[in-house]
Length: 269
Image (tube, rainbow, N blue to C red):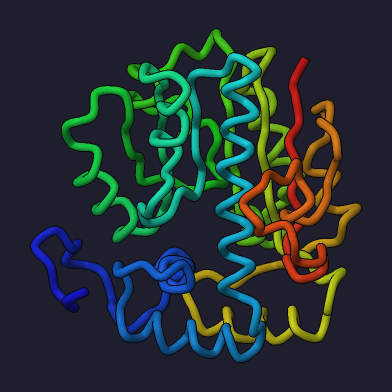
């Protein structure tokens, strides 16, 4: 990627690394800056399996979307969607039903700008610049209400994003507000960094991300499970990403501890 592009927001500070661009770098993407790559290398030094962790998380997203499509869901809200890469939600969903609709939301300007460029000619997908801590703003946004039928089931995707919510943000209450905004029959797919597995490695990751715009806050299995309060967990519950309904892509061959991320899907009755 060239360090300047026509679509790059002019107020972006390229010297301040962001989680979305570091994740893009770990996935092999091109929408990142030198500062993101430098911090990405520190991330890899702290957690050598980080690229595999990122791929496992992305594979969980794919399986979760297909599971919800199998359940009849045809509209999705993807919070913290990040920089577009291969296997976006609308691409996955439309392999099942070409009429599936998707609202993406992120607060990272590069992710938003590139997503808007990608989706500019797509009538069934849109992008919001929004904060994950503002469920009312996301659900009440005109782009959301114009595209989705909020009286019908929605697949809410919060994959690798809630660990950016600090304890003082009260993520359990944030999730309560999301649950109240969702109509009955909706689903929540969520994944989250944990320090339960290899805590020293995760401590190193936390220290690295303090140098970015997006510090992370790993949580325990019990704390992550609490985020599903009010939802009925689908089998196999909250597990390592590699173990959530693995398919034959080979990624699940690694031990669950290598993921460093727990994942689950819940249903709102």
